[in-house]
Amino acid sequence: MAQATRHVQCLSGPRAGRVVWRPCSPLCSPSALCLPVNLFYTPRMLALAAMLVAAPLFIALYAYAGYPLILCIVAGVRPRRSSARDSAEWPSVTVTVPVYNALSSIGATLEALLQLDYPRDRFQILVISDASTDGTDDVVRRFADRGVELLRLPERRGKTAAENAALAASHGEILVNVDSTILVPAESLKRLVRVFDDPTIGVASGRDVSVGDADNQGTLAESRYVGYEMWVRDLETRVGSIVGASGCFYGSRRHVHGRPLPIGLSWDFAAALVARMQGYRSVSVPSAVCIVPRSAHIRTELSRKARTMARGLNTLFYHRALMNPLRYGGFAFMLISHKLLRWLPYLLAPIAYLALCMLAVESASARVLLATLSAGVLAGIAGIRRRDSTVARPLALAGFIVAVFSAGFLAWCAAIRQTQMAIWEPTPRPEAQT
Image (cartoon, rainbow, N blue to C red; front, side):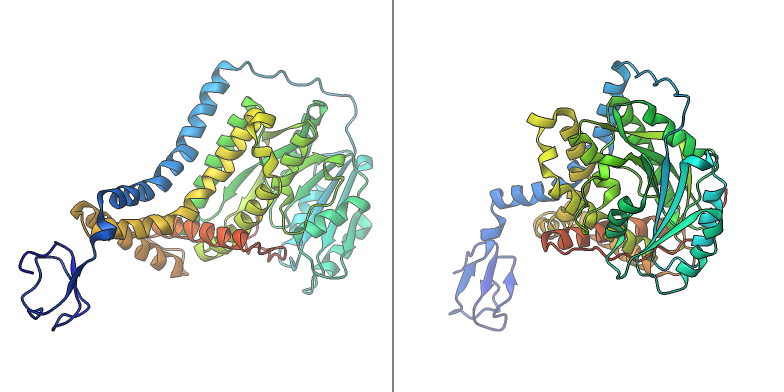
């Protein structure tokens, strides 16, 4: 056994059980039995490992760069839609505010909503309390003499259940959902509602503007991502329709919400999908701004993103028929590109990491890449664990990336296990300011 294969495993002798990477070690006894273990390192297996490493990279490159490029090209050659003529009357509107234990923010939110520029006789504010326990309901009741209505649910069932319950208590032709931790400037409501003069529009999404401490590098990346997402939605609007609305501030025609949604799903995503099935398109309204304070810590964003993506995946699979391009054409293409392919790399990332470990056995460049990636992951974990806002920019960026991928993978696990993340915790945010 003087000339053994390159990868062998000693079954006896001083190195029994160890992998030997050269011709069989002399430390193995002459009678040692050595079996080849290079079955996993055939050219075919190495090629498969390389494909697994490359898959999430190429999918993400398409979803985040290739897809917007296609939208830019299509939007450039497609004539802009003419705006519908402004009608003389404003439609009746119900602003719904689902809350759970929002004592620290609900007062300021309601004060801002009461300052909205909209005809008072066609305007209803409805707060739906998901069995809050911290005094939120008492704060809302103080606004009763100013026209604010409270609908308290007897038991906590989650945000979607609260939004389902709002339909029976609302009076408006247009339902506008507002998050309890954001600020809507006075002119934004009219700008959002005005687009419904176009009878082809079923859902209108406001423009999120993420604000916060400019020195907090930990969540500054989130603000830039929000800006990117708003840009993509503007492109989709020019092409035809967005595939999901902003949960912080969006409006829809009343009959879009005609049927209750399963409580494990998300209405802000589902509204655009239901509207498409009813023959409507959904649009982004850049002038309908809402101010969204950034979370102070990356760890908070991780929890929020995991919950949001898990509910988004459940919503996507529930309405999976809309991904059929033979029936829904361009909308199916946009839904797959914007949602499914943007989320898929999070599921494939751990598999790609294991495949890279396999390639590192044979390739020096793979070992360098593995070491660099592992160092980045460790730096990201350190960034997430830091609770102060003075994290260095490279550490903060690594923390944001690791948090996003961790949240995405956890979301896929929840979706695959069919875990219903119906109950939500309000995301702690600083007070919104213009």
